[in-house]
Length: 464
Image 1 (tube, rainbow, N blue to C red):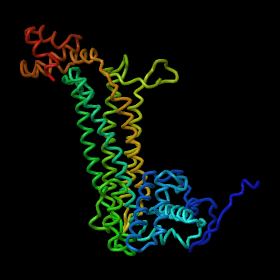
Image 2: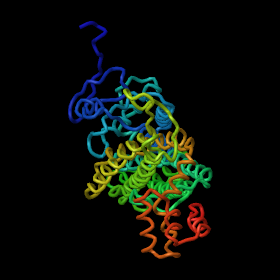
Image 3: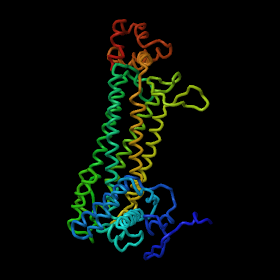
Image 4: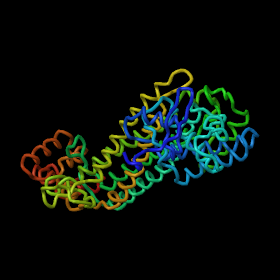
């Protein structure tokens, strides 16, 4: 083996034993051990979860120094180290698998070790020499995985929702704009995928917009729930080893760092035992996903064709749709939206199962909850933006085809009910379908209406 291939290491030890750590690594033995044990998925913590933890560690170093519990120089070094990570540095040092030790202790210690070693470097001391800055005693002062991980989940989730909600609002606006543009386009409605009474295309799109606005309101309500933090509960929610003023000061500082008005949970035990706000947030994403699936599938139907389908709307042509059929263009963005939403629905089930798995003072399934919530929010944020910009905004109507369907639908017979009765109207519809004539032609031919009455009663636009 060449000298270049030899990985130089340093030796670190704890109560379990010794571990070899790459000499240049900012993480320590707990992380190295976890990297060796938990080789599962290759999935790592969301950048938003890392950012949330950096805010917690920075805030804790500042608050503990203010309370006279942490050396000011050590505090300053930890603060600077945390800010380095927030600024995008050292990101490659967080490689713990999503599926790891329960409660997220492996990832939390990864954070503590990286910040301790970066702080040591800032102070001019070697990595791994933890006498001056210790991952547990200093970086983790007045903290536990059991209160920091739930807090980080909520901060990260709230940040994610802050990015998602504007995209959902923009989608609702785009659907509303299309509704206005299509307001005079009359078409056949469909129920049970069969002909139904006429409706305006704009009315269909207005319904989509109203649904998305309702989904956005649910997201806002869930985001509010994520603003309640249980920081300061430490191991079991009693605040052991934390200064009495620490929780309130932490919430104030975290609000400043995140730009969100957080509030202290009224019961720190409950904030560790239950993850109802996370479950509620995931549920709101699932409900948004279900509505997006429905709307995306409607657009796929409405744009089907171009010659053998509904063909009532045209979606923007973004790319060829087949490797063998020339000229084929598929509804690629709605298909992408479907796949994203299927993943979100599955993620919510994982969050739900993890949420009910809490026992006594702690729910140890937090890492998988965080991963699924943050992945769902991220892919919805990006997917909804693409759906809005590259699909919805560019939809156009085939007005001639819509009008033809509106004038030929068998459901026009519904308008005859008040004039000739349901039974006669059903006979008219049956004969029209059998002969290929229109409802209007049959009604006049049978002497049930005069031509003038038929024009007035069977006007599709008037029915909408």
